[in-house]
Amino acid sequence: MHIDVDTQKLLEATTLRNAIDYNGSARLDTVISKILGSKPEIKNNLKEVIPKIKEIVEQINSLSIERQRELLLQNYPNYLETKKAVEKNEFQLPPLLNAKDGQVVTRFPPEPNGYPHIGHAKAAIIDEEYAKMYSGKLILRFDDTNPLNEKIEYYDAIKQGLLWLNIAPDIIKNTSDDINLLHYYGRELINKGNAYICLCDQNTIHHLRSKGVPCLCRVQSDKILENSDKIFNGFYHQNEAIIRFKGKMDSHNTAMRDPTLFRIIENTHPLLGDKIILWPTYDFAAPIEDSLDGVTHALRTKEYELRNELYKQILKSLDMRIPEVIEFSRLEFEGLPVSKRKLKPLIEDKMVEGWSDPRLPTLMGLKRRGFTPEAIRRFVLSLGITLSETKPSIEVLEAFNRKIIDSKSKRLLFVNDPVKINIKNVEHKEVEFQNHPSIEMGTRKIYVKNVVFISRQDAEKLKNGMEIRLMELYNIKVLQIDIDKKEGIVEYTDNILKENIPKIQWVSEEDLVKYTILKPNKLFIGDSFNHNSLQVIEGFAESFVTTLSNSSMVQFMRLGFCRIEDNKSAIFTHK
Image 1 (cartoon, rainbow, N blue to C red):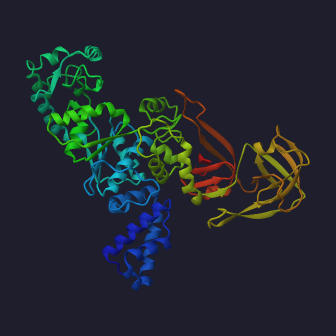
Image 2 (image 1 turned 90 degrees about the vertical axis):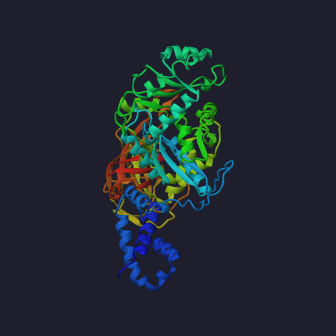
Image 3 (image 1 turned 180 degrees about the horizontal axis):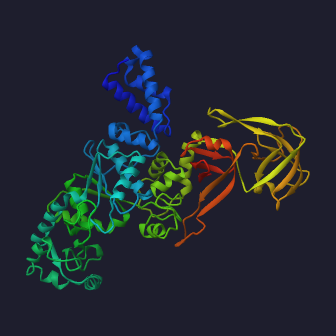
């Protein structure tokens, strides 16, 4: 039948949103229910519409979840998160000072000098949540004024990270877009006598700042005013001149001791090429951009707390609007630093696989490990806005994630460091397993003859004459165990459920694959890289695991939740 354009869009948007909510697989009944709720008149033609809904569901379910999110963001961004109403959440952020509904503008200003990590997620989520709370707007603004560190791949990585987190900015821009405007305001500060050109070398500047003494360039700034044209017109080269703010050289706040506002960097910029060599520092660009962009509330991590005086003083000197500035603590876990100073050397020296290594706190690493964007959001909101520098335990994030993935993860068998068990006096058997103990996920069958494998850890606990139960199979009595040879002999006893005998898991010789599980551990111990931060667990898994698609979540019983990497390996997520 013919479907009008509006109905077609409703079907696609609703199905994409539902697919993302259910880990890439839209549920037909839920989609139908939501569509009927949005457009009740469809009930009149339900028999004709349902085949079309089925067709769209099948098409969208055939796509990767990354592609689903990409299509939703491109075509139906309002369905990612509604900004007209705040979703009910068990964690509510405190209200903003001087905030008016419909007028709040926040911004997330990452520098494109690396891949986004859990700290970026915290900032972006808080910025977006406040925009939603007040039906306002969120700006994604790339702070790209240091061409020494920035690359196009980092712009893209940040966008993809936000997409994965289901964050849809209302405006996306670059600070470098406004470079001529920033130069204009730099000239204005100089002309007003609030900034000056400094020709001192770095050692002299550092020495005088530490003593709180002005340099000759500041004292004679009126005499060398003509140098302002030279620095803006490219007369000076790198390290020959900078522009400094006229602050207070005797201030107890060292951030106010004539900080640098512009410096010369003769390096190719990823967007502007070689056209610009005079670049503003973050201290200058951030307040100007915030004021011009209409930002009402600038949320910044606590590391900028001492620089807030400078932020406001720059805008006051230029008679520009001053946003509310709010600080909150950075986010990192114990043994898992987010500092690029620590992470980049690991990648450059190939001590980790790359930015997506599951040991890293990058969004790519967390995603590959099996954490969900929903868990990260709930975790961030549970922390709230605080200046406390205490590092939360990653177990808290794991608890949020466990609640989400538990109902989506099939239960499978896996044995580590396998020991072969020969079973006497037993008939061949086909046993049926539920894929989930409490949720309908179907069943699978495993064929068992007279040989199974158990983990060495379980085998070491067995003694001759001991009776145990092979989970969901039957009871056996231990006749002989040789740990060194990794082999044992047992005999079938019965299939009666007995409360007081140990239950161990197993894998059938007739139904197994060699399987590897990579288990991330603490990346750092103190300040030192942990060379044992990635544990390789070798063993046997039941062959059903090879039928699952990559990125699927499973729970290997008695080991923990894992994310399928390929048909030979998985990555341990958490218990």
